[in-house]
Image (tube, rainbow over all chains, first blue to last red; front, side):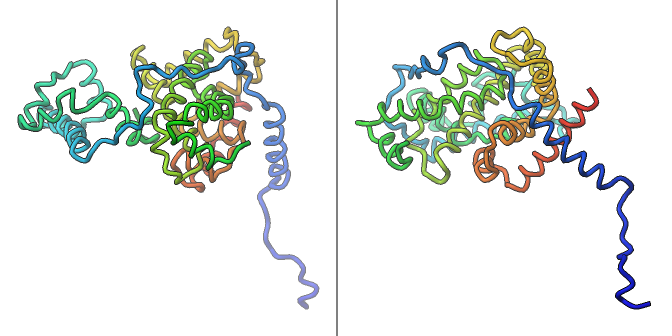
Amino acid sequence: MTLKNNKKSGFTVPKNYFETFDMDFISEQNLKQTFKKTGFKTPDTYFEQFEIRIPKTVPSIALRSLNKKTTFYISGIAASLVLLLMFSWPSENRENITAEAIENYLIYEEIQSDEFANFLTSNELDDLSPSSISASEIETYIFENASLEYLLIN
Amino acid sequence: MQNEATLLNQLKSDDTKELAFKTLVELYKERLYWHIRKIVISHDDSDDVLQNTFIKIFRNIHNFKGDSKLFTWMYRIATNEAITFLNSKAKRLQISDETLQQLTLGNLKADVFFEGDEIQLKLQKAIAQLPKKQQLVFNMRYFDAIKYKDMSEILETSEGALKASYHIAVKKIKLYLSND
């Protein structure tokens, strides 16, 4: 037998492979042709009338970023909370504490601020007084630190 | 359209910030609205989230370092706002995210701001059965044709993972539609 006469590779494909492949391609095209629009609409002239109402209480000047000390305290409170929950939970169940359980605990158990305060010195508490951290600083912290992955599991 | 760098400089200057912001709102309000609408579904909720998104953009524009495109940065804020909104709404109603989504879809047929037919309703139901991240990827790619490179900046996920995610989402939706 010569090389020239041996024209088959020996490879095969599953039955109807090319037919299915073609159908798959067509159905994907059909999907796009059939479902071009979402079906959502807006009230008439919504976009023409749309304007942003910036709250007047919000200063238009640049917000200062949280300094390292403040960031440390906010992160510290979060860590304290986890520790508080870890040690107040029955020991046999500690390994099974889920994010959801902690979240439910926070929602329904009404943790008091003095419980957090036990973890901080009086100087640290002074630094955390309302006058030292503004709402906008906290918002900036959350804005800069919240990731989509975190939001999706919460 | 004016140059993005020029617009950014104007947004960061106190003298020109307000006017530049109006320009920014004009340029992006529709694109951001439709992105948000596909996530939160209801028009009224989308309007609230869009307002909050632009307020956050206004307050934080000075923090924008230019590491990504301005529009991907804004899309990221809009996405986070929309997801946060849904999380809060579910908590307020004391139901899971999935239940909230089913509830929202159940009301869609009677929604005056939904003009889709049975086919579009079916598609929304098919999208709703995907995990949240796949829903985002599918909507952004399928309806808005956002490039994977840009999507990667918005969702902070690698292009490869996004491509795989989209591929899986399309397969699941085709399967749902063929079985339904």
